Length: 211
Image (tube, rainbow, N blue to C red):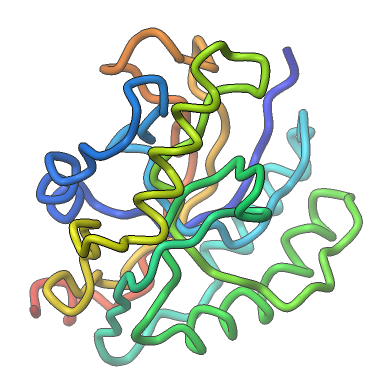
């Protein structure tokens, strides 16, 4: 199986450790994203990048400017993608600093895809965090899964957990990802589906220890 590659903004476990116990409304066949896999996608890069492309992407990451002051973003209302009728991704929209994330993506996405030798995505970016995925349409529990997803999304009883302002996520890193060994790990909850092969700090060293 050919591996996929993408650039994303990692979400550290120090945030997600508080969230997972509260994502308990979904049917058991709805698969939560592994805590180490949580990220905001910046650019999809396609499959089987050559060594030259990989090296060029890593070099480009290394040259990205770091922020001169700390920036944070928050997660707001639930989102189902690509639509609410047959979603393939379950997550949250970005609240605070949505425009900052959109700008970051628009500034760099085209160059990442150029280095990967694939067509650039010209759509306005919709930064979001995917937290779970439903089973396939042919799964015998799909209808029940979809019902639990819709209830979480609509939040009519007010029980859906939304991290919001309580968890301001520090925007301090960007990374190049690929599939982990054993992908897709659908039957082993302790196994990641992605692995980071290169990281770039987005804050200067003098800011790394500031809250």
